Length: 290
Image 1: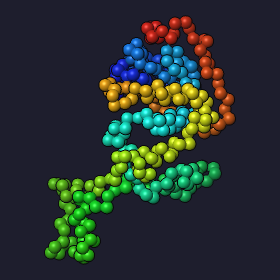
Image 2 (image 1 turned 180 degrees about the horizontal axis):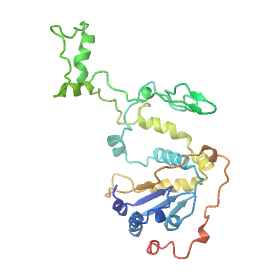
Image 3 (image 1 turned 180 degrees about the vertical axis):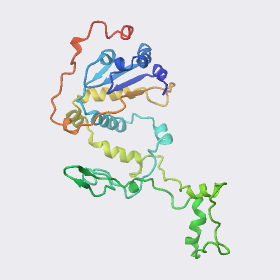
Image 4 (image 1 turned 120 degrees about the horizontal axis):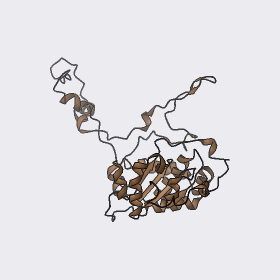
């Protein structure tokens, strides 16, 4: 995305980054959006210059970004604060997953397809997933499968290659049309209503149901009220009636940390840490980059 597009957003979320100091050139567009009335939300363990100019600062525990985002995802889904038309038509939310797929709540914390662990206590253990059960559920017969499935449906015996009536062998050189057609898979099964329990949307909904506001508070250290306000502010302008294309932008760090030992038991830091040490005038938009 071109950084200049930030200036046209109604809401900008900066997470895991002190964008004002680390990316000052791109942050100019964030400040332009703020001058136009956009809401700036900063999610970070530290109170920085980005926090000082944000409309809402959400402090979380270090390493708890994934837990916080899980609570936000649950809030957006359960309160119907998403672009339904976009989700149905331009994502895989309506796509139905293989019937053999099992989520973590079904298999005691792991996904289906986890193989046996290899290794030793000194060098560590390694477990790899076989993602065969994670694939899309496809129709039984596609356009490219009619010729091959006709034999099995009519009971005819296949003819060995090279004999009269045998199908032509795939070419080893151009043109590659026959080869490409042989690689085309049947179309995937979809549920535009998003109600099928095996569609991606419902799988995500069940997976993130555990991230309640109370559980999110214990893990990330952010108050449930702050998380709800973030969800309301970040999604308030999302809807079919909005004339703007960029109603919300999430600007985050390239790698968000996940530290499970910090989710439970870590002491919650004061929400306004370091705020008193900021020089005067830092929260003025026209002085931030001066």
